[in-house]
Image 1 (tube, rainbow over the protein chains, first blue to last red):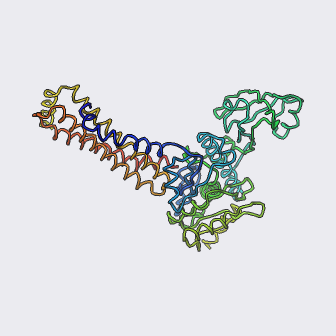
Image 2 (cartoon, chains in turn red, purple; image 1 turned 180 degrees about the horizontal axis):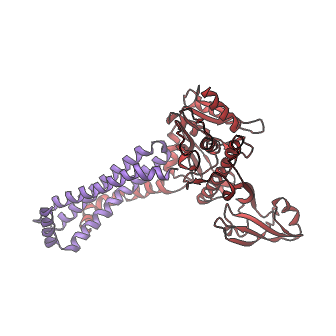
Image 3 (cartoon, helix red, strand yellow; image 1 turned 30 degrees about the vertical axis):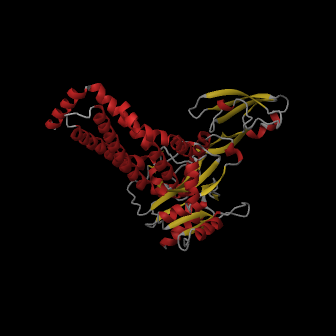
Length: 350
Length: 122
């Protein structure tokens, strides 16, 4: 080794500083995010319902994922800047306070709850024509946001289930009663369940400036698998986020009904699913349109939202098509509900 | 194979195991110093152009094969510098060594493309 070092020493001396600079550009993270096109994932590879095993499905139903890089390196920032399909912006809002690991936890939690929402909506829709199908679920409250001033910040994780709080008038279990039962003291005991089921109690102190605990909860419905029929399996997913909800619902529904709703087509799309079957807003429209276009899908469902939303994904998608020189005719389909998507596919078969 | 084994015995007798390990260590160290930025660049570009993931896995596989070749080339150079008047056939040993490890890298690349990526990308 010494011989090599001696021989290469003039070159090493010359390249040492440029090498360190290059490594800095490649490694140092900056407070931006880069959204880039990703790919399609067939829902079948994520969720498998043990029903209609002999049914042959001609087409495919896929969710669309994008690559969301939080705090990219300088180099990634520069590469992204020159790609026509990427969106680059500064990290803002609560995401700017979260570590990349915490953002991943939120993203995977979103995925977990979106899968259960898809199962609930699909099973309910399929049970209308088939009394054999039973869906049962429970309401749970989860930790979904943590402010920087939250006391015992590291003890509480995203996705922990809220169980109870010892408030001014006794033990309360509903998050609606938290504000009215935490007026007299500065600190209260909260009990949570970790994801692995372990229960723990932690004392949370109100922030002196905001007079808040700094914790955000979200209610979600979780499927009771013991009393639900048919059984199903969900594979571990490496792709987070709730935007696959609509397509997951369509695919699960297709596994439950005797007919093939795919009509032999390569179907993809995006949009969250709400428990009433309505489709919700998603981000990264430009990248998802690019992904769909690059993967040559036959049908791409996009949320067409009501006036309550500031942004309309369909309008965004049309703008993205124009920007990327893509003709949206015939494959970009706006939908407001799961039923809209189903009606569209059934209309293709008539 | 038998011939190669004899050449390896000659090399070991001429240099000693410590000198061979030292040369190999130098080859690996400098080979990685050259290629680590290349790997990071390729992975970072692949993350932006994820829709070309398979193309990038192929490129990274070939880069790793080239990396193995360079490591062997540097090891050969180190051994030659240690004993300029050497008599053993180092070049043949290093070519065989490089081909073996390049094949391993190629197999790993194929496993990634055919098995690991389809499993992980759910």
